[in-house]
Image (cartoon, rainbow, N blue to C red; front, side, top):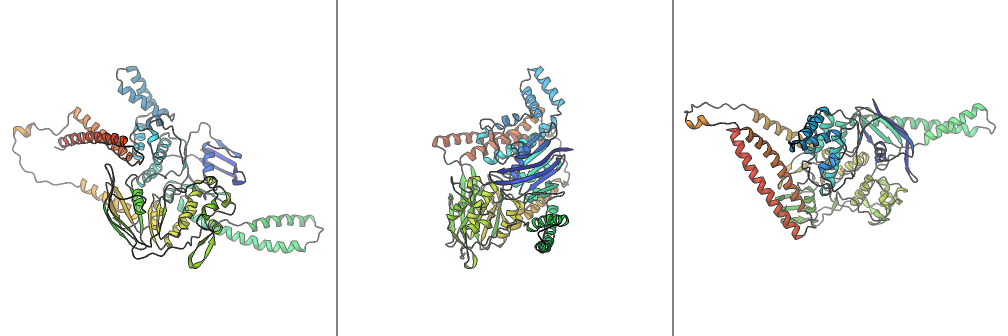
Length: 628
């Protein structure tokens, strides 16, 4: 069943033509990925499909009554609403019915209201849906529905937008970089979710493992043309190579034919017959085909690297914490030449803080950070490039000099360097604020690398970069002779370039794992299976006769109905208090807090911890009764 059809759409901004005459369709059940270089119009296509933008020419035909959800890169919300109010305001009839039913349960005196809410739940078959949507919020770490949206981080807002899109169960879900701002655990959950749900997807993502495991069709926008591939990412790579090879053969044949026809054209007299005119028309078509060139500029990163001495970087008993949040606890490590370390861990475990300590942008509470005299850091942060109003692309690079040194004593101009980063001469004189998100990241990467670092630190470098740029960056990093440290949720990227991992577990625990991300997942899965096997293994206990007494005759190992209800409620209360504790702890990292605000937060945190301790103690008490 066809959901929508795109017919000959075009989009341009001033003289910049993004694409022309693009046509394709989306059918129910398809999971399509759009692959293209940064700046060629990926986001514009998504905006047109979702109705957020319109094409200059052409049109999009939608099936009548189709419901589309769009996950934007930068979702917009009303900051005054809570998470719950935001979700309820999405207009989803089922969610509204669930909210009405929960309200009716809280007011049992209104029997008529309860009856209506119950009937709506039955009519919409909302019982299972409630479990599903709460599971989605739990997996995306948005369990506390009372938090105001204005207090959420950018990553949490993106997760809220993703939760809203999934909960709405649209006919077509359009996604712009869905894995950005998700930790590895969330990404793997989302993969499984899309694999089991019969959803129709159209997405842009740079996450190649995600492409491989979720999508069943690729559409590539290459040099202004669309090329469909009915298969996953591996199939696409195989068929694309074959296509480019075939195009090269055809281009070579066209050039040979052009030379032959050019010789014939030069010999022709001025008076031409109808037959020769037809051949002349063919000649012009052959000339156009023979002159076509692929615009596969390869980023050549030959930046010179500063010499590295014997001492690199040493961390001695480094400690770092915020109020009630431990980041590092007597962390020790001696970095050696050529180390390639990946850093993984859930959001909020202190990965970026660790990088800031290493680069002297933050200071440890205790311990020492010793940096070698020859070490020059190149630090690529999540903040990206600082945009100066009215600054052009070429001016950004010229701040580092008109000429940049390369290996073997060579040098290139700022213009030539930008060309190697896929910025043609025309694009170099564009204003930086006009660049796409991916182009800005590419420019920022350029500014980091041209400073000749010998210790590269990359904090989420793959966000917003296209797959072409990622492949070239990976090849450069594989040849990079200095030290490398990477925080990334891109598993493919991590597998390719790192030798071992720092695994941030939280509460100051940092494990040094020897291997890449796939090795780590294999190890973790095997440990989990081993634990399950031990848990399920039957234990044979020798029976010992027990003398009956009035004490053991009267004992019971079952909870009463009220105790069981209390036990279940305690589990939810403890979970909620744990989340509240984390939220309050995170607020302490705000450097703009006044003394009064810090005092108020300290009191709030103390109350939460007191309640948590009391409820946990009661939970253990009831749990011991159940276990007998």
